[in-house]
Length: 250
Image 1 (cartoon, rainbow, N blue to C red):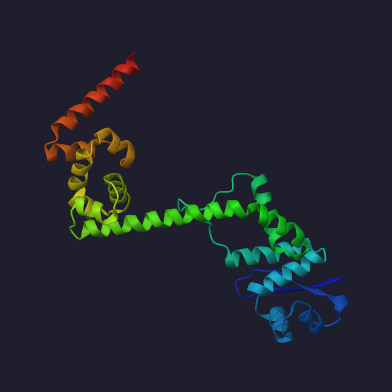
Image 2 (tube, rainbow, N blue to C red):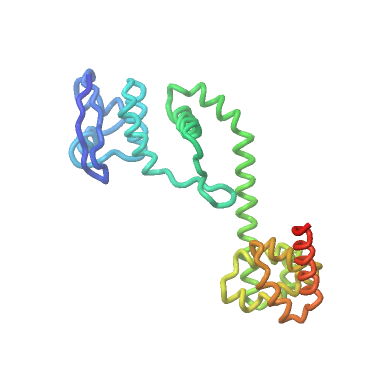
């Protein structure tokens, strides 16, 4: 049998706190959860449970078959601690279907609830190589981002493209990607001709620059090539556009 006390504090609109009256007293309930009785009293009247207390409440509710209340405590715990999980690209993971939602929630139940301890051990072993691969991807992405920011700082300080290439022992493609992905408008306006000149010197075409860094838009690179007097690169670009049109007409 249950008696439910309703809370309206600490940001909870109305959330239930469970008493299992067969324990008899608040003290018995507090002992069951490893809490001080004063804490239980505060939960009754003016303070919502948080953190580890929520996890203990969820486990107690779930173990005793009170799934609806367990879901309330689980949601509160998620709201308190959950943040969007980044992928290596820095974007939150998107749940695409109800099946994925159910699988994710089921996985959380397995790793959080004591009654699934055996299954949790097997799941963790199965997922260990997947998790390790994801962590490596995240580390690689973070390292690339840090390198990109460092490259931009050297370019802002006035270092030459050749000098930056030597410092990072890399190539002009990495410098170009860091520049066009991380530089602000002022730096782009100041150094874009230097970067484009280095790319052209390395054999890049205007089309390749547009595809790699400009989402297919080539006019800005054409303007830079014109300012640099790179008329051959412009003619090659115009010729490639004509060849594409001829291919479409055929």
